[in-house]
Length: 33
Length: 455
Image (cartoon, rainbow over all chains, first blue to last red; front, side, top):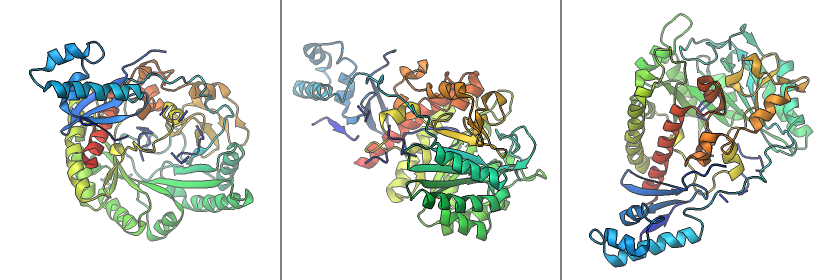
């Protein structure tokens, strides 16, 4: 690829995964390696 | 199911970024690709060459077009919605995390406290040991085949009931042994630091996987909102306790966590203040409050807040290049090994996998709903007896929340905070719009930071 660099779901949960207390987000969270 | 935009593209911190919503793929692209994407779906290659031949070399246009087509074939661009009918969330009603309110009492009187300065609109009270022990037993009994269980000591101020905290940690370790270590408790605690002495620090550092230290940043900002019982500012009482704690913490997790309000829309200065004072792991959250409060964040503040996040993302990149240990909670994102689609669809699991326990042992969907009797789910002695509430929360996800289903950020924000939605809109299925705008900006910043640090 000359013009595109990929730096990174279709994982379909085991329930084993885990500061905010108000702004919940899972973007920064998988234990199932 | 509504079909939203399949890609999201933006320019930030000198990077052209394209996010494929349904696969989660993130691409850094050249300007030529960024431009072509506006026409790729509705124009032929010949038309696109015609459109851009004054700006780009024809061979490059053809090459860029082919690269986009290749990613589309690989389902990393314009990928279709995943069929989620097979995702049966928590069908066995497993509980894996509890927020233990060991103290409905507090030694501070923070103006914005959702817990009504610690008492959660009720009488001040401390959790008795037998209630806490029963909560841990309830968690094990309802945890199904989950190994990793989480218990957060919360309040009010949990250090006001620290003997019970210690006994519960020891009891948790006993229960692990009794269950042949097929269960593991991950203990965490949130504290305002007033009572944080050496003895407590040593215990916490030995037993707590994560610690949240509450402080708002610069002294004048903190002291305007976080007052002692006698009405004085709390900064000077606390800051050295937190520094002492962090010095002894080693490489274990902690966050110093503040709240920003309309009084510090320049909150990046508070983050940098923490960093200058020696704290590396930092979180600053927007206040959520009713519109009649002088410190509430209003529509008119949003542009300033979004600009502040962008401005701070530039500072963050520069600091991060020199100090890899520097972390801002909302700029952390894992593009390599993030959670599965199910977890991303559901979020925190409040009211289903995650519940809060009051000092009397009552169960609520999470700490933010405690005190609202409408949301009481049962208690740790007799279990969940309001299954209607549980079913409502189980059905709340990014596919069933109408506004989330078409949003490009849905697999990162997971539908936002139910409590914020309920407190603002009276319905936890209707996301808190202002929160959405901030979350999307934080996400754009987080990805642009990774893109810059990647190269």
